[in-house]
Structures are given as structure tokens and as C-alpha cells.
Length: 554
Image (cartoon, rainbow, N blue to C red):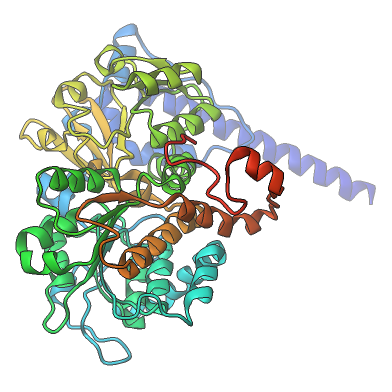
């Protein structure tokens, strides 16, 4: 027994000695390689990778040694054109390729055929839809079921109102992100009696399997991830242009559907009973129409409802900004210099999340009130051109246009990450980057390197489109709040007696906001305190609400 034990120890010692010598050889080999010109290092990437693989994980490797200062400087330079990988694509290719999000089953799809060129039918024999692959419906159904588990308030509304069918006769044309969460909303509207036709408001946010599940259930949906601009407008047109079917309600996110119907089908637009809009961009367009006297239907501004502003915009973005950045870049936030453009509810959520993970955050603002809030929350308020050279990340959250211009992009440092958390793709001047002197290199889904002639690389996410829904997913619970608000707004406009709403833009009634919030409280086992008659009289309130005046700022 003793001899066997000694033999085993001796063998282990020999093996350890052998491994140590191997690691020494590898270290020497690597040091020699790094003493060569940088272009030579790039030519031996495969050999270098193999060398690293051979190193035992529990052994240390010698530090990189440079033969002289000149070689050290050469090693630190940006990659040259000859050293770039063969992933470079033409600008036109990288802007139109279809990619799926990290959360999407459709990542594995190799089918590059445009859905417009396919002939597909669902199990009921209907072909009134256009999705990537109807065969993915089963996977989409599972994702919808997962979302339903955290959207209990919307499901509760569906069950409460299903018997009454408050949307019976409503023909809803919808243009939103097509995700598992919006699918729960769409199927709720159908359960409440509506006929729905749907398209996507963003060319990158559609979950293909969810679109397939909706098409399989009988909803006419026209959307897939990675649409071209032409596809985008074609899908919108197919959504509203159907023989024997005319929309009488519009649910929009961004105003593109409303704009299309207003411009292309004015007779249909005039007969619409109401528009529900949930984004800053779309609401801005509605107010422009109203100011010009061209809005001939009542519209509900959901974006500025308390339940949208204070929950979806703030809490949703607080979580999803990190998710989107991690999935696309694997970045570590601690110590990074970040500038967030805009300190509205979206900006507040982004800043809060980034600061919590150790990022050094500063803010740009045009509004002195929001700027003061940022200062009081511990953020420096700066001008973008003052700090852009030092920033590791630039994030836009304004809803405006040309917030980040070509001048800013030219001054950014190598490796700066640029992305947008606003609805539309106007905040970053991406068009200015499509010039002959710049090279676009697709790194992974929704991630492009834009390479300057000197080798500098800026990392552009989702081509300047909405980061969280283009590159990741969003919390189902928060979207339940917004979706419930949208459903109630549709019910209110559709059932309102004639004359209640004129041809203007309206905010959601305060009572409805409070009702949406109350539906979500049981998830937290929350118990509201009730006013006594004396207390209600003292405050001048109804015991059942509303509890705040319309001018109250939450």
C-alpha cells in the first residue's frame, strides 16, 4: 500500500514538472511573437489562440515582453486595414440583414428568403398574414404563456370584461412592437370582441415566433425581425388596406400607422372613432395635427398617463438598459464614463441603473427643471461636446433628432458605445456614417463597428434604433401596466357617447389611471388604507377616488 502511494506521488510530481515546462515554453513563444510587428501578430492569430489553449489554467504565464519602446508603441496602435477580420460587409448589407435578438428562438433560422416571397397558411387555412415562419408558432405560444404569468392584471381585465365584449364591432389596426407582452394585449382585445390587424413599429423588435403564434391564432399580423424600410411600409399598408375590412380604431406606437392612414387613406381616417398613442414621438405628431386643425378624430395620449410615464418609462428602462448593453457588448459598467442625453423618465431610469453598477454618469438636458433634478440626484449636467472625447458610452433618451451628430461621432474615442433608448431612430445621425471613408463591420446581431480611416472604432447598437426592444427583452410586469392602460383607453374611446370627446388629444382620466394601478397591487400583496368619511370630507375627496387632481405631479 505504501509503495503504491509513493509511486502515485512520484508520477504526480513528474506530471506537474512537465506541465510547468510546457507553460514556460508557451510563455517564451508568446513573448517572441509579441516582439514582432503588429501586423505579424494579426497574421498568427490562429497560432496564438492554440498556444493559449495549451496553457494549464492553474499556472501563471510570463508577462508580455517588448524588445524596445518602438515595438510597444506599435502594439498599442489601432488595428490596421490589413489586420481586420473578414467580417466586414458593405453598408447596404449590414443595414438590411435580418438578425434575431438574444432572447429569440429565431436566432437559429438560416432562411434568408423574404417573407413577402413566401406562400404560407396557418392550420385554419388562412393566408392573411406575413411572418418569417408560421411553423415557429408553437415556440411563440410558449413565450406568450410565460408573459401571461407576469401580466395577471391584464388577464384579470380580460376575464372581467370578456362576458360584456366592450369592443364588439371594433376593428383595431395596431402598430406596436410585436413581442410576447404585446401579444397578450392583442389577444385580450380579441377576447373583448375586437377584430385586430397588426404590424410592427420597429424593424428590429419583432419576435418572429410570437408573430407566428399570433398568425396561427387568427390575427392578421404583418411583421418580421429585420425588415427593410420598404418592408416596413409595405407591412403597414397590408395592415390597413384590406378589401371588406376598414379600421375604426387605431392603436399606435410612434405615429407611423396614424401618419400612413392620414396620408394614404384620408376617407378611412375620417371614419376612425379614436386613436390611442403611447410614445413621445407619436404624441408629438398628434399635437402637431391638432394644432394645424387636421386631426379629425379624438385621440388618447397614453404616453403622458401616470401609469405609462412613471412605470413603463422609468422602471422598464431602468432594468432593460443594462440587459440590452450586456447582451450586445458584454461590457462591464464599473468605472465607465457614461453620458445620458435627456433626464426625463427614461433618462432617470437609465442613469439610476448605470450609477448603481458603478458607472460614472453625467447628463445633458435642455430643461432647467430636469437639469436641476439630475443635479440633486448626484449627476453632473454637461454639454455633450464638452465631454464626448472622454466617454465610454453615449446613450440618447430625448425623443428629439440629431442629438448625436457626425461631429460628435468624429470626436469619440476608440471603442465608444453609442446607443438610443428613445422611440425613433432620429436621435443619432446614423445617415452621416454611411459615407465611403467609413467602413461598417457587423460584429454580431445588432452590433456594428463603424471604423474611421485611422482605425478608430465606434460601436453602434441597433443602428440607432430603440436598444432595449431591438437587442433584448423588457419586463412583462411593467408592460402589463402599459398594456392595461392601452386596452382601457380603447374601450373608453370606442364606447364614449357622441360629444364626450372632440377632435383633439386627451389625457387618460385620473380615475382610469388609479384603476390600472389597483389591478396590479395584488401581485405585491399590497393593502390600501381606506379614508374614513371624516377624512374624505376634510380633504374634499371621494372615498373611492380619484385621490389627486389632474395637475398633480407624481
